Image (cartoon, rainbow, N blue to C red; front, top):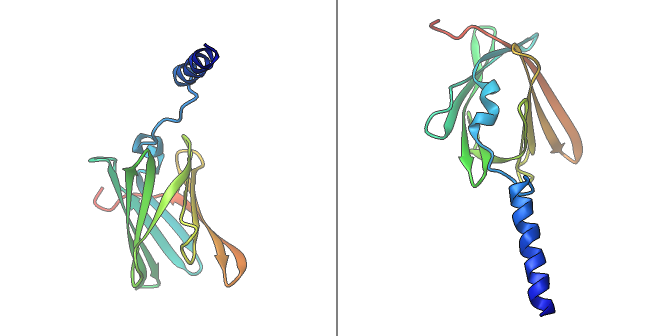
Length: 161
């Protein structure tokens, strides 16, 4: 009889947890619509453009290019997709092997992705600062030292518009 009572209490607790939000919900691309559009970071070292499509087919596609003067310095294809109740950030940088970073935190203005086995970065953070600003921060260790690289993007006009 005690076992049935204990089982009943556990069942009630689990059902109450599900009903009142105790269970985690799947993270979808709807959480990161603030990333859509064209972004630009300009510094003395060059210009980085990052452009993200609207979510369709459970994916967002991003492209990035870095230009120094009139020369292409690097480019990257980015695929953001829903994967097992999380978001997967798949990066295909020029001249390097692809890497997949899984979301660890997603809010209405922040997205954090990690792959602790990757060389550098191990963590990518994006956050929206109003409608026209986006911060991207690459984090992790490199050569045994902690390192952070920050890019402050401004909304840019998309080509062809």
